[in-house]
Amino acid sequence: MFCPTCQAALIEHALLDPTLKGYRCANGDVFYTTLNAQFGGIPTANTITLPPMNDDMQILKFWLTDQRARERLPNQLAILCRRMVDIAEDNHHIAPVRSLFAFCPTCGEPLSRLDSDDVYMRGLRCSNRHELWERGNTVFYTEHGSPAQLSGDLDDDYMRTLIEFYTRDDDLIQPYVHPQLRAVLKRFAK
Image 1 (cartoon, one colour):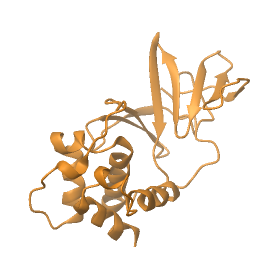
Image 2 (cartoon, rainbow, N blue to C red):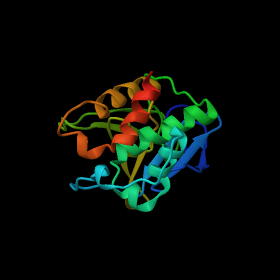
Image 3 (spheres, rainbow, N blue to C red):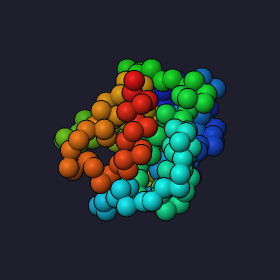
């Protein structure tokens, strides 16, 4: 597997969230595949009773590693929490890149735009005719005859946008974010 950003080899890399399979290249680019797609259900984090915790890292790690709590956490919010831990513990910051998916993850060849009428995804193809469909920080493709997906890690700028989103006092957002976790997000944003 090749890094879609820099073409270096991607190797498996352990991530704190057990619902993700992580990869990292020698240049520090981090990608992952999601092992538990959430289709249509509302993961209501506000239904979880937390054990007493006062440390922000303990709270973040609880939400990522406690099976019942993790099931109630939207994947996007879990990815944000994991990135917060990465920054706090390893000072691992990620700058935005112009083209997250410049190379084919299957063969490492450069990707070029594929003409398509799809308004939701951008088609990409390499010289070996591997086709990928990009939406946001994720590409969807076929690997060994099976559907596959690969996502790039959140950059620091997008993290700020997500923190603003998840800390809003909005009735639609409230069920997704436990009040204790919302407080951690607000402290991190300062």
